[in-house]
Length: 181
Image (cartoon, rainbow, N blue to C red; front, side, top):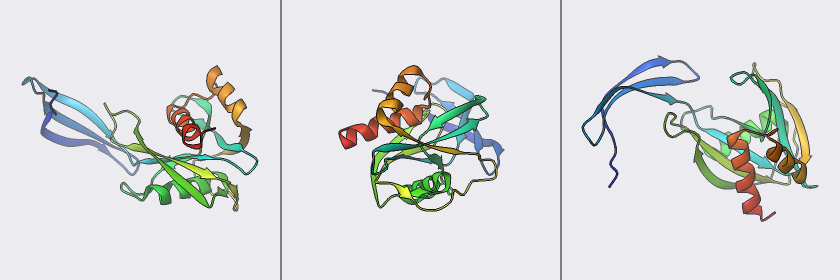
């Protein structure tokens, strides 16, 4: 039977308001010791699959510096608090990035982005009958364009690789399954 590793020592290698990089010394079940296992601690993320009453998917387009590309994604963002209410945090991010809201949200569960190296989860939601609710409210480093797209176009963009964010693709497929579209 597979067993958990035992943490012998743990120290922060880097800590700021965005991330914490932890260095663990671990003993494996076979007795081997790894003295430099790095773990990235980040806040959880909320992802919202939102459909307008005319069945358009609300997506956001923005530059992502790590890969140096423009990305088309479902609205998503980091929780303000390490431990926050998934619906409250996801709805806040959705509203800030898009200017839209919805009366009804469904929780689809959480996914781990990279359980080997990261501690956070992505919480997935469906927002039905999304409507304009005010102006966007960007963080200082955000520049976001909202796009409303028919689902058949979204699936073609996934197939072509134009939409390539793992969290976005997972959220779309989970939502489509939930809604039986």
